[in-house]
Image 1 (cartoon, rainbow, N blue to C red):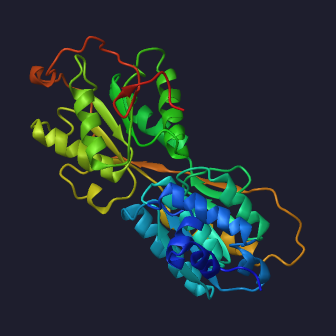
Image 2 (image 1 turned 90 degrees about the horizontal axis):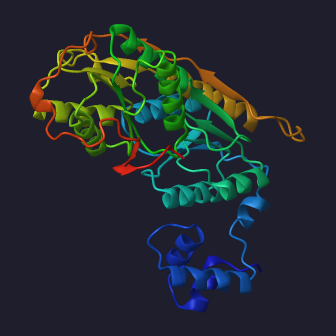
Length: 365
């Protein structure tokens, strides 16, 4: 009989739950213990995916969805996906990585062991080993919103085009100092938004300042900190592009702390389809992504791969890139001079380099 997790646990005198977590790369397992478990697994010739290999070809009618968080846009996408899958006779297994690479890796392996028929993945990192394991077992993956591998299908938005349109909107209003607040530099959407922002500034003929981008995290705290840094400059921006609802909340809290108003003191462009953007006073101009359409398309793309006839040759990855549009509302207007009290402390360098969560760097990775 092949070795099991319980055999490894008995050999080491520990629980089979600990063994399972270590082999799935879950965090919070002591590294020395993890090493001993893996050595014992090799000695016993244990194969963690033996069950999946033995049952290859059998369907579970379950599709996995791995998301980094459950903020409004992802929760909305998950609801659409679940309904679309149910209509096709599938159930959905949802996992949330909390933007943690270790948790992401663990959930990728866990869902493979659960024998999902396919996976829709909003990647935080590249995870090449996990991608190879899915390919070995013939389990298709569709990337959603973000991309991490050129070998996988993807349903994404035109992030660069959207950032360019948002920046051009502000340039047309007369703004030349435009701040951009984004999340982690190693996320594909962030890189694309930076590209579009810089591309728009280049078309301004040298009139605009491209050094006002701030790169950090997709959190309220970072939204507030980045806004504070930008407005404390000797020459603060007259407009901000803030690229998630969480970041917008942080920015608004900082603006409220300063008794600054939209768009009199600063114009603001948000990102996404948060319901409250339209009812805020003033309503917030935002980049609108076709979340519902993208979610449904990702399911149909995945099921097309899942239901491909046996022996279908390997396919070239297909990337569907959907356009976005700018919903112009009342939070953007022509610039007005800033109150003097905004320049809290003169900066030694009025045009600082891009900041990577508070640390100066030359350019994002």
